[in-house]
Amino acid sequence: MSFKGLAKGSTDKRRSLLESIYLWEVVKGLAVTGRHLIRNIFHTGDMPTMQYPEEKRVYSDRFRGRHRLMQREDGTPRCVACQMCSTYCPADCIHITAAESDDPTIEKYPAIFDIDLLRCVYCGLCEEACPCDAIRLDTGIYEIAADHRDKFIVDKEFLLHNRTDGTR
Image 1 (cartoon, one colour):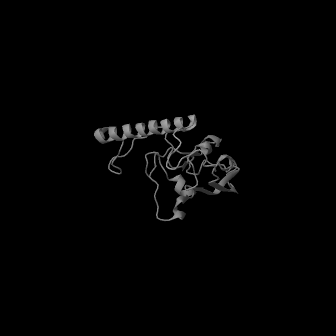
Image 2 (cartoon, helix red, strand yellow):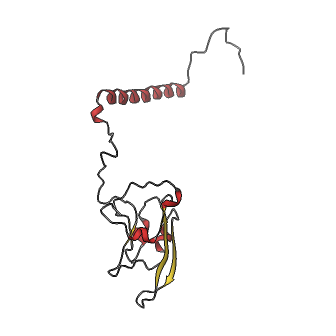
Image 3 (cartoon, helix red, strand yellow):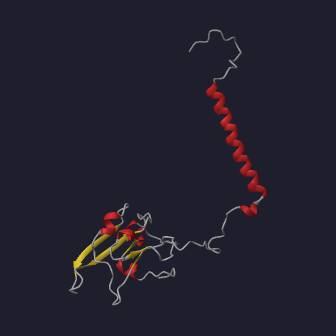
């Protein structure tokens, strides 16, 4: 670093074009932030705060809630254990173990059907991939809480008893 040409106590007042533009952009960003801050201080009624759980949020009909397995008329799962949903799942959260069915019209059924809700990204690809419309994300249940991680792995019986009205 060369200090030639600089007298003691003096600084170089010239800024490059890049430094000038950067400083101006920082000032503009601070102005936007300050404007939002002042607007929110004086207009608190416009702030989108909900008093949860007293006020529940209204979701659209296309909202993807917790999974459910559809049933046939006789109460058996509609799933034929084709593994399409677990293949298409980007999070790899669906685990199916197939078994041979006693019914001659059905080749296989899921002996084990588990979904890890902590891994699931609720993208709906499993719902689209299913050829027999066996899995849906239309329960309306979005409050998912438990005291242990193991309770977020739901099995076939749990999925068969989820309903669209948001209850189990």
